[in-house]
Each structure stands twice: as C-alpha cells, then as structure tokens.
Image (tube, rainbow, N blue to C red; front, side):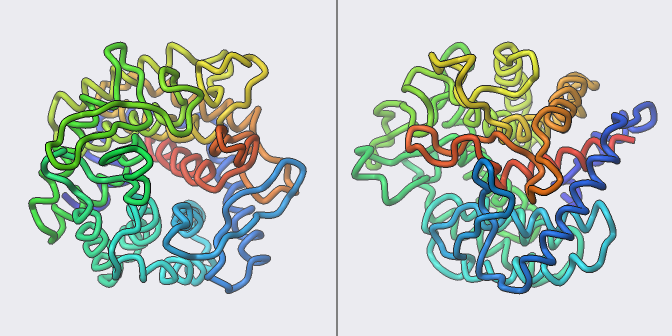
Length: 388
C-alpha cells in the first residue's frame, strides 16, 4: 500500500470528494493553527531535545519535557510541525520538523521501552516520510516496527504494553492505546518489512476485540493475561474512573485503531466493530459532542471534559465515513466545530485546544491543553479539508 493511504486512504475518499465540501470553519481553523505553530516554533528555537507536552490552566506557553525513552508524547510536536507544513506550505517549518524528528531516531535503535514507540515514531518519521520520501525516515519506521514486534507474545496474541508493569498487574498487560501502534506494524509490513508483522497486528486486534471490550461495546482500558499459557486473567482500568466505567479516550483509541486496521486489512469484522464501538461512543455524548473524561464519573455534569478524546474520534470518524458511504461525517464535523467554537484556546495560548484530561486518577493534566489533542485536531482538520 502506498504510504499516502496512511493519512487519507485516498481511494476511499474519492467517492465522496466529488459531492462534498468541507465545513466553512476548516480553512479558518487551519490558518489559525498553523500561524500558532510558526509563532510557537520561533519562540522554542532549536533545542530539539525538549518537546512540548502541556499547558496548565491559566498559562500560555508549552511546558516542555526532555526527549527520553519514557516520554511517550514526544512524537506529537514533530507530527504537528509536519502537518502544519502540509497545511500551509510554509518552508520555515521544515528545519524544525526535521530537527525534532531526528532527535527521536535513537528510539529505533534500542529495545522498546514499551508499546508507545509507535506513538513516538509514526507521527514524526511516518509523516516525515510521507511528505519528503526521505529513505532514512522509512528505515527508522521499519526498525521501529521490528522493535515493537519484539514485545509480541504469541501465546497471548498481543503486544505487551508496559513491561515495567507486569509485576503490578500480575501478567502480560495490553492497553487500548496499543491499537494505534499497529499502524507502524501494518505499514512496515507493506513497505519492505517483515510480512509477519501484519499477522502480529491482526492477532493483536482480534485479541483486543475479545478481551478489551464488554458485550455492550464499551471498553476496558487494560486486559491482563498469563504470559505462559496466554489465558485471559482479568480486565480493568488504569486511567478510567473504575474497572466497570467507560474511559472516554480509551473508547476513542479503539474507534481510531479498528478503523485504521480495516484500512490495511479490509477484513469486514474490523469495519463492523469500528462502527459498533463508534455508535456506543456517539450514543453517550453530551450535547456539545465533547465527552467527559469518563462517561461514568458520578461528578457529571461537573466532571472534566476531554477534548483530546473528541479530536481522536473526529479524525477516526472522518476516515470511517469513507468506508460507510458518508455515515459519521456529520458527527465528525459537529465534533470539530464544537472544539473550534467552544474549546479553542485564546490567541495568547500556544495550544489549539483547552480542556483535555491526561491521567485523572493520578491527578495529572486535568483540564490542560495537551499536545496529542492538538495533533489529532490538526489531523482531523486536514482530513476534512481533503474531503473536497
């Protein structure tokens, strides 16, 4: 599969493009966001060893964290730079996009710290390769896929998410977020990597479908398995309100992940499941289409929202709409419009969006601007624009 399919799945979009125009706010939003990126990057300078992570309520500048293997969000700022370059054509963004991307190359050359290497390397090197065809970027993605595959346990049928947490969970743990890292494996398998990586991704998706979801289509954050026998031990939450609650971003990762897996595999079960869990998510949304951080928090309507989950789902639904004769497009547009009209950060704040929730049970990044919210928001805007 040509790499451009990773971003828009162009053959699927073609049928919609002739009769569709993007919502009126998209051009304004893209221009505003890319202008912010240019201004922010001018302030940040050339220290590519520090990566924007979040902005606390009342602050205006990105808090940066060091580039290191434990920092799972460090691929999103270079991803934003690549998307902003794509949206604007502003070549001043190329040097920092390359600089932040190159700063992450070490990840591909060492054993995986955890599953998040896909989040780190695909928004950065993946987008970089798509836009520049730099062969060294492709090499980095292929190497990352190999490292990710080393975390696969064939007895279980999934990639181990958090090696460091095996003692705490009492077994091989697989979290919902891990679905997005399958993109690295699937793309790499089609672009010169080991064909077995495709089968690993499919097995992981099938096992996640079985044990990270309840019969009603709502998701668990974590599934835990016996690493020797592969037997499922239990499912629970880590970042949600409770083991039996519905953590909004967990469901968002699932919608995005199963839609993406269908893109590569064209297996009907993945498309059907993506629609099923999307319908569950949509049925539980508040009026403004932006979820509370957990749909079951008893503090609702006074619970924090999670704009990052809304951005992830909006991007996913735009792709899903291309496989379902336009179904879900109106929902995605409504989410993006609400984010733009109701959750937009003020001009003096470097982020695009306010009101995301990172790790609520840990008291971390509650009601913050968070870099991955901006990444998926910008991706969704570009996807919608390209539905012309």
